[in-house]
Amino acid sequence: MKKFFIHGIIFISINIFIATFYIWFTNNQYTYSNSQTGSALFIIPKNTKVDILIMGSSHAGIFADAGNHERVEKILNKKVVNVSKAAAGIVPEKLFLEYFFRHGNSTKEILYIIEPAIFYSSVWNESNFFLENEPLYADFFWLSLREGIDNDVLVNYLKSKFSLFWATWRKPLKNNIETYSLDAVSNEAIQKRLNFLYPDGQNEIVFDKYKVKLAEVIDIAKANNAKLTFIYPPTLLGDAPGSERLTQEISYYEARLFDFTNEIIDPSLYSDHDHLNTAGVVRFTTDYLVTIFSSNSSTISF
Image (tube, rainbow, N blue to C red):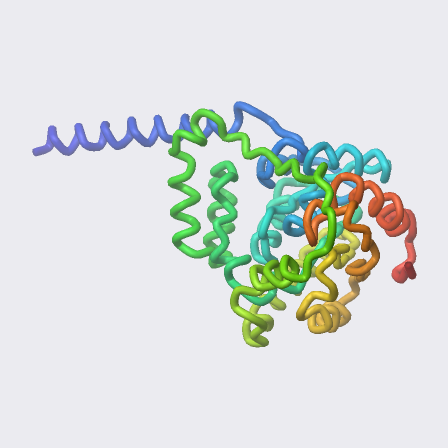
């Protein structure tokens, strides 16, 4: 019996060692830039000073996709790190922000490209399977556990690292649709998109739950001496449901907010009804972001 127990301990130890080595190997064999990967953790540096940290969902991701990251850095003449994540709500982005600062990084400016929809459903937050294409880091796992990320999401995070995909490829590429161009605006497509963005409708109780996370993001920025700027991105969807409520909430804090919802109306500058293509990103960065980040004023009119 004792011999069986010892053999069992040895077997478990060997498997733990193999699993640990495998995770280390798949996490560290490659490094990626913002233009190469949809993973936020892969591109978060250590002990690095950057000029601008960009947060948000896919509306922020387009500023990194398809080589756009390098274009944005060149236009702004600033070092940028983009921790956005497709379909990510305030909870996942808060985790990436906290992780960024925990690793000795600093930034002068934080740009959060935000939309009201993320405050109205857990689908974009703790129930979001946003970790599947992220490397498995123990400290980030515990942060996620503490934040209340759903157990199903965390289990999937662990399981996904032992898949054939992760072992052989594990390079979650960015979406390259930014070179596409929208031909015309479709009211049917707009309504379909809005239905997707608000799967649970607009419930004030749900909003109140996630506005607490907004306050925590603002507190993290203040604690790290970073100026926080929120913007509503340009889209062809019209004014987003819940935008007045979110604007009111942000106004309670010392943070800048700019509404660019209806600033770009040319369909040819979009890849779909609410995402700019590369030409649109270049136009928006040149016409608006340059002004925001070249001014020390707390209020700017466009």
